[in-house]
Length: 405
Image 1 (cartoon, rainbow, N blue to C red):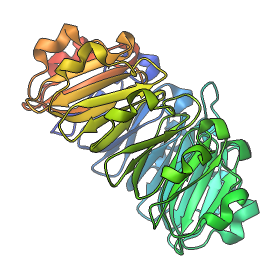
Image 2: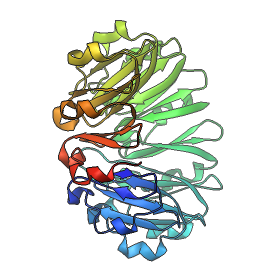
Image 3: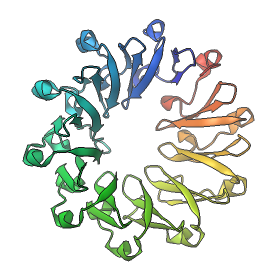
Image 4: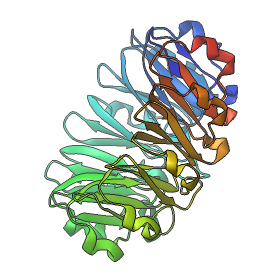
């Protein structure tokens, strides 16, 4: 899917995954923003209306609420549902009820909504929930309780909420005083009681599928949740000082320190970086796929590690020079170099092999990724895609339309 500079939209890929927009193409004009669930899309038009397409039970069919979708300001997605914030602060939800697509039980509470966050379920599961921050700093949740949709046990504490972060089936809210309130599935970080006394002056929170990691004001880190998914950082606790940022794969964390070094933890999913530890110096940015990490160093080179297809970049290592940005699909990486060319590695069917389009990947400005494919926007506004057809890697059917972005 690509939004053109005139506001119209073109898509590619199988219809059941949201790739067939022929039925709504005439309506996809003056598009302002687009959001995606796993297999459907929702576009906000300039007049505040919404057009959806893709798999019906993943939010691609909004006919039941279409009359309500007016003056839409924002749309947020779980795996199989959408939630739209209207100009008056109310919310309209649609899609799979098990993914938060039905908010009728709390509809009268959803007033003056400012932000919405969604849990994202886990592999092989579709239960997801939404959490909305209201103008007064309180929170309203809906969706399956197992995914964090029931916050009644902590409702009295959810006041002056500033941010909310979500794991697969739990939420963590940072309050105005820097403390944290959690709820949802305990095995996914919904129970932070063991570390509650340490959660003070929290600045940021990051989440893997089953755990959370909070950066405190002094640069230290507090973790909780499933030990095997990064919830236990005791083995590296003494090294987690002056932390600047944290990135998460689905089961591990990578923290960049102020001196440019990196500390990782978690059992698998890139939590063990010992093989490359001596190379992780002057790190500028880290990108994560579900199973791997890729770090851009100050000299523009790249270091990769993990347990998936993207962990081994040896075949292209001599090409990874002057890297500016990296994007990740489900099991591959794509790096934009300073000259606008692209280097890819990882699983072929997830975009790790771009040889078929390499001659076209020039003057690349940005790269976007689905789970199975990449789309590169060139300096002239055209688009080049590669990867698995299922994920949008084949744009040949609409290639002539991809001339403006």
